[in-house]
Amino acid sequence: MGYEAALKKAWEELVFLKAPNNLSVKFLADEYAVELLPRRVFSLSCNIPAHDHLSILILHFLAASLKGLPALSGQWVTFRELSGIQGYYQAYRQRAIEPIIRKYGQEPQAIKSVLARLPGSLTTGADLALVLETFPGVPLLIKLWRADSEFGPEANLYFDANIKDIFCIEDVVVLAQLVARQL
Image 1 (cartoon, rainbow, N blue to C red):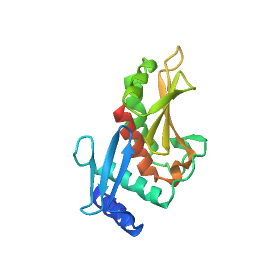
Image 2: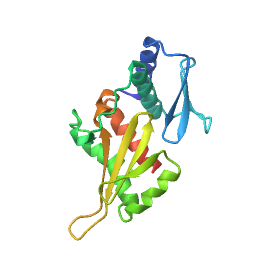
Image 3: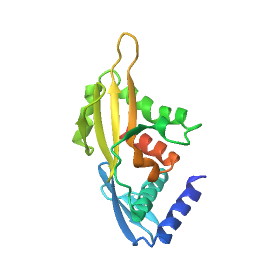
């Protein structure tokens, strides 16, 4: 499904859920205004329209919120542990994992600097780990391992197990890619 059809479907779902005309949602360090009429999503910090792929993600999050976000499970899962990933993993790795490895693989400690501009905190695990708050109630755990004598640097992203009750697998790929770009 192309962006146009996905956007149309997402807007229709918000109308069906009787969403108010004006909504706002935080995504990472920005806040976005959502107007059902004239069907517009825009960044409040930049006052520019959101890209279609981000608009779809925001609309899907708002729909899940209107239905009632599931409570955090406290269980972290990798993308591979989510169901229905056949055919998606390679694209996911190229779009989300590899950019993080290229940027922080040689010096995992450098990723700490993102906490000055993105909502999150350090946590334990790997050589360095941090949790970012992507949307309210949707954390993402990033773990980095530096190279050793046997293996090159590695990274992985972990989602609360409830992610599958908020987003479809395509949305999880987009979410991970958007986070990787912000790092």
